[in-house]
Every structure is written in structure tokens, then in C-alpha cells.
Amino acid sequence: MNNTKIVVISKNDELVRLVEKVADYAVEHLSSYSAYENYYATILLHDVDTVIIEPKSLAELSKSSCLVYALTNQAIIPKNLELYTDIWTDWQNAGLLKKHLSSATQILILYEIKQFSIGVGHEMSAPLNSIQGYVELTTVIDVSEEQIASFLDIIRSNAQYIGHLIYDYRDWVAYKESTLIIIREPFILSDLIQKIKSGKYADLLHISYLEEQTKANVYGNSTYIIKILEELVSRSHVRQRSKTIIKIIHQKNMVQFSVQSDQAFITVHDDSWSLNPSWLYDAQFITYIIEQHNGKIWAEDEHTLHFTLPLAEKSDK
Image (cartoon, rainbow, N blue to C red; front, side):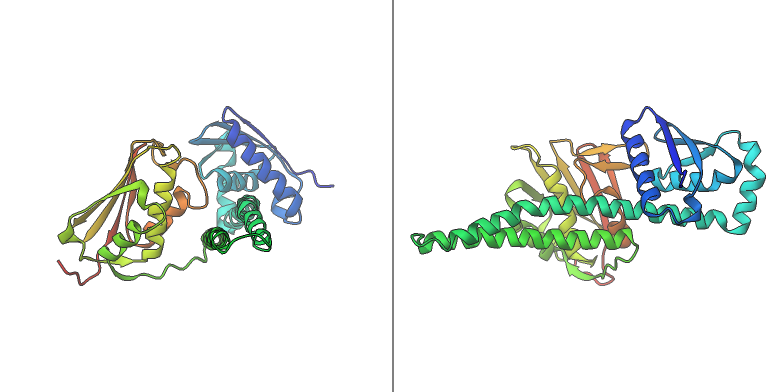
């Protein structure tokens, strides 16, 4: 019988539920991993920035610590630290700490992929049902050609949405598994601006830029950058009548993009930020993409987000 159990004590109910769910998932699906068999740990999460672990025994410090670190990405402070210093050093020297942390991280990745696959499935159900319904309507005898053309437009739109969702999920899984490859190449800034202007959120935003700066060659992947901008605009338009402005500024060897909305769509923490609501393109994924472009990204406040992209070596000014 597997006696693995994790007890979580915290004022942060959401974090408690996350740790407990992933711990249960680890026990159920990866109980054969010796790192997670037959131990009992109490995890005290006093706040989001500090994790204090009180293992049942010294032998479980590495295992429970690594699991919590993988779940919360927070600093780990063992209770009665002086009692664990020697054995912690031994584990580091033996490479066991790295082994346990790697296994814990894999558990978290598997759990996140499982949870998001359920969400993606729910997200796909509505457009799939719509496609099925309109396909059946096209078979009705007294439907006019104009109506059939309208039905086909709806079917095409839903099919495109499903396709984009599948590609986004594929990229997100690749990012989580550290296998995502982003191919970068020079593209003209004006081309990117025109694609945004003709995109699905064109009517919901205003783009501010200087015409003479749009001939700049940016080095990156325009498909991902457009996707990020569209995702940020969609977050800032949960309410009707909200206004979003994209400002594009040419600065020396880089281009800065600023997305600003009169609606709060960002939660700013001490040293990080998150999007409201969060989905596949969350703050971590967007940050990863920008950093892969050798750019920087930061939140000014709950209404404004900035990121930079490098210019190509040769640029028309």
C-alpha cells in the first residue's frame, strides 16, 4: 500500500488546492517513482513568497522540498534548518537533489498538460457542435443558396478557430516540455502593423506609430508577435466599450511595443505579473517567447504592458 501523503496548511486556498491536486495526481500516476513512495510531509505555506517544509523524517526532505519547489517555484526554507544542513549537502553532492527536482518538475508538467487538455476539449466542443448543426442545415431542402453561403462562412470561421486552438495548444505543450523551436528572421515593421490592422481585433484597438519608423527591419518571428498582441488585446476587452492602444516606438537598436487599456487586465506582483484571465498564452509563456527573441517584457501597472524586440542588423531608416 502506498502511504504517500501531503498535507498543506496555508491562508492561500488556491495554492493549497493546487498542491493537493498535483500531489494526488503524482501518487495516482507515478507511484512507482521511488522519490514519491511512502512518505508523509506537512507543508506550511504562510504566504506566496515563502515555503516552509517540515518533513516527517530527514530522509524525506529532498523529496518533499523538490515537489513543492516544482509546484510553487518559491524559495524553500526547511524548518530547523541546522538539523538538515549536513544531509542536504550530501544529497547535493550525490546528485540526488537534482534527480528529485527533475522528477517533481515532470509531475507538474504532466499535471498541467492534463488539466489544459481538458480545458481545450471543452473549448472545442462549442464550435464543433456549431459546425455539426450548420452542416445538417445545409441538407434541408428549402434552404436558399444565400443561406447556405452564410452557413458555410460560419462553418469556416469555427473551423479556423479550432485550428488556431490546436496550434496554440501544440506550442504550449512544446514550451512546457522544452521542445518549442521559434525560428526568427528579419521582417519589416510595416508588414506586421498591416496584419494587425486587418486582424480579428482590428476594430477593438488603435495603433500609434510614426510612419517614417515603420520601414525598420525587426529580427524575430512575426507570427508569434502578432499572436501575443492579439492575446493581450483579447484580455483587455472582456468588457464592451473598453479601449486598447498599441504604441510602437523605434528606439536605437530595438522596437518597443506598449499595450495599454482603460480596463485592468494585468495583476502586478512584487517581482512578476500575470494576465486576467489566464489561458494558454499566459504571462510565463509570453515572457518565454519574448526572451527567446532577446527582448524584454514588463508590466508598468495593471493597465499597461511593454515589451521590446531587437532590430535586424540591417535596417532601413
